[in-house]
Image (cartoon, rainbow, N blue to C red; front, top):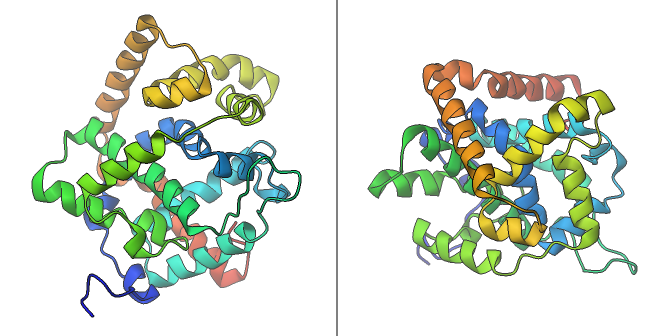
Length: 284
């Protein structure tokens, strides 16, 4: 059996080098985090799984700070962590995901442990990671593009996605992405859930009033057109002009910032994960 055809062991998946990919984990990425959540939840099974999750402490709409920390910690572990970090975080996430499954009242069938759904979530994370990297550093081309893509499989293998499920090259990923985007669908229930997140609807009214409109506008700006259509939100030329100016400002700030400073929050979160492990405290 060849190396490419056999099933990779978990230790091999954990050992995947992500050095180039890790350089793309930039502070600017947090500005598109809500847009990435919307992309993930545009898959109906993921959307209903999150919107109807019975795991109270993991709900974004009820515990936004905790959920944001968990997600950012996951990204830090995927990009910077070692095999033990990824294994421990995977086990912690599994403890939550195993509880998220559809019941008789669910409009669609879902199971958070489904590796196909995890592949979609990982693809959205990768899409966002690549988007931010290219906005700041310019297009990825040639061998560097392929290396970046191959290292990006840690988006899924840090969960339960098997490495061989990752499309074999960047072109194949593009085909997978286009095929999945053609299937996205956002129901009224999930749409209301997502727009509430985009509007800061879960925050204090003063925070919502002050920051909600900008957060919603930049969130919709980051969405590819197909997702805006599925979300049924308007987007004008004036909106696009605003977003382009916003991105220019963010990119200029990011380019002035040293890499260590841009990544400091994620490094601290990785340290926090390791301390929590030593103290026996929950990771998620």
